[in-house]
Amino acid sequence: MKDIEGLVRPNIARLSPYSTARDEYQGPLGIFLDANESPYETGWNRYPDPHQKVLKARISEIKGVPVDSIFLGNGSDEAIDLVFRVFCVPGKDNVVAISPSYGMYQVAAQTNDIEVRNVPLEADFSLDSAKLLAAADACTKAIFLCSPNNPSGNAFPVEQILDIVERFDGLVVLDEAYADFSSIPSLAKEACTRGNLIVLQTLSKARGMAALRLGMAFSTPRIIELMSMVKYPYNINQAAQSLVLKQLEESVETQVEEIKAERALAYDRLASYPFISKVFPSEANFLLVRTADADALYDHLIADGIIVRNRNRIAGCEGCLRITIGTPEENRKLYKSLDTYEEGNIR
Ligand SMILES: *Cc1c(COP(=O)(O)O)cnc(C)c1O
Image (tube, rainbow, N blue to C red):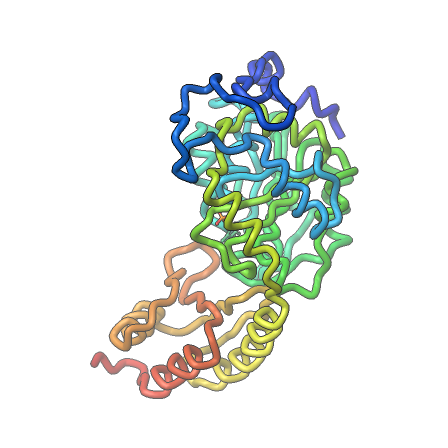
């Protein structure tokens, strides 16, 4: 791989980060007349810790990765955006991504004026490493992978991902938003030492904290330092830091097991409908299904108050709906609605 310093945008390499008022003082209780805050206690009158030390220490314990290998963002979406802002020169550099995949890579690339070279997955959504690597050129700073992949649900073998990490000169960003539901192990620990791997995880899915907006990136201390230098100083607000810390003490193990059991039931049930031609195997908390008329099936479900994700207009997902696994009761309601669907019949 290339030296990481050679991948960084020159203006970022020269950046001296904003030092916050409280960075200089590490002592115990003091009188804080440095940040123009209100001195009157509201519970929220002080700026939050820009380094999220307490939260990172707890996440470090839970994930088994060193504190200096952890970046916390306002959702994984912030970490995705920062990859472009730290490494990609607008109008010049490009990234390679798989297709279909998560839409934010494209959006973040476009807002940063970076070309995305989309490499279509195979018909079964497996990945051809040679095609992926062939799409890269001297201006390719990163390859974006998502495993388990959204919206297809499949995970790529660990050996295949590590092989890509080894063969590619630039960064590999591996989005593991659905890792909690997968039988394929996470590469978060691997990312702390590899040098060119960034693993993204989120508290928005299995951990049940989508509203708090907390995404994590795991990588080498230098890559984490670069991302931290470019982020807004107070990117994780105090409410999120406090509430996440508390909520992390709740186990989601039984919920994840229930979702996986419901996923197996849903796979069989959905496959049994004559109008569903394919249910794609999933390592995530959703199933992608193919049907002759996705828009009609979508409208049928909407009429019953059931909202799924219509992926019909996404390349590689023609005729497909993505259905999140809900509670057992919600899933029963989905089946009840599907039981009354008749192809070609508009209600
Ligand atoms: C849901 C999802 C995320 C989560 O994004 P947050 O900003 O952390 O909520 C990230 N990547 C993928 C592939 C997702 O599906």
